[in-house]
Image 1 (tube, rainbow, N blue to C red):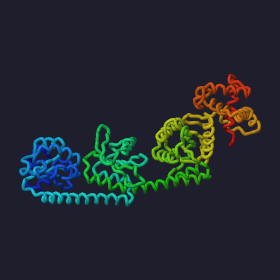
Image 2: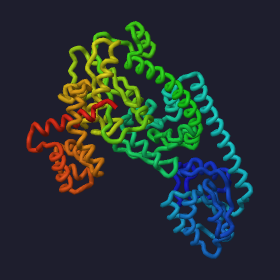
Image 3: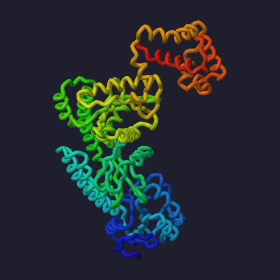
Length: 535
């Protein structure tokens, strides 16, 4: 018979318990991983349909009186159902527990107790439930103590950082909080083992069919985690994750994580509300500054200091508009990008806001700074929030006076307009890259300019209107693709012979030749002048 004092449990050494109070003690000190929370009596063969997780199942052996070997058949089913242990009374209906059942229980880590014939089941129920209730009372007291301590901490404005530090110490395991923007908040132990720049590892936990126990790999170590949703509808995508790094999770640890989710949700609402108010003040300041509504440098410095942006006079500044080349993101997406740029920008001093529906950047550079390095830093920031090659930065001329930043903004708007017309797709565009198209944009709309433009454009528009054709549209796409007939036909969804015919028809109407360089140049300039004409 097994030594009752040992902490391990081997079913092949059946525990014969003369006093069931001792059995309960052994169950708590043995290698069982399941907690007993109730007792169930099995005296029918189909009891498997009625058992529940956490039960200690006891039987007189009556269901197996004719087939003791059937005990082995039911053990895997009991394990699957989450039953904690099995107690079998011998000598009355069965002489002993079959060896096959004990071997199978050993393999599955499922405890079996041999109960003396004199055992009274009501005594078993009473003894176990007394201990279960005492244990539950202790756990509830511990849970309440933890919850009270953590709630007091947040009540006095300690914030999420100190909250996670305290929770880390209480549970002696790392804690990770993932918000709805995939931003990670890490407890002190988590900071040592978790890569903050890899939020996708944690956001993947949202895809699990249900929250609770899961597994992840950190470095070369596979660990168990307990995942709980922050208990607030506004933040139903936020996760609180307890890592099993130093010690196993207890039931109270998991209950603690579930309960404090309410506190975390409330604190995130408060923090988000404060942040939104602060961001509104910062946005209003940036918008007033960039558009020139703050007239004097004294007022500008006061507003900047109030928003936490002290001005450095020894800087030149640029304003850039972000031109999205394919699909323009929603305002909400741009607002999320602004939050990311303000909190984790690699470009020191980079500011962002939304003006007239466009994402606007304001950045400074030292008087003798290297502009290419600054642009690389900005693009590194942008690539984090938007796909590469999906945008172009339209950069206004630099200004050395902080109160004259609006001039750079006006430049950026013009560059944005011209680059849209000319479909520039370089990573960034300024006046130098616009070349001759800058001159066309700034040409006054005089009678001479109108006459030059109309000489090429009006005959095409009149022909299209009369014959329901597409000469003008074809010509636009033709120049867009640098006179490539194949690419033009692909964009227009028409045969390349049709494109060639239309181009020839344009030449006939205008009396020009596409083989003559000056003719091509004049026609192209007329097309751009028409696109840049005032609405």
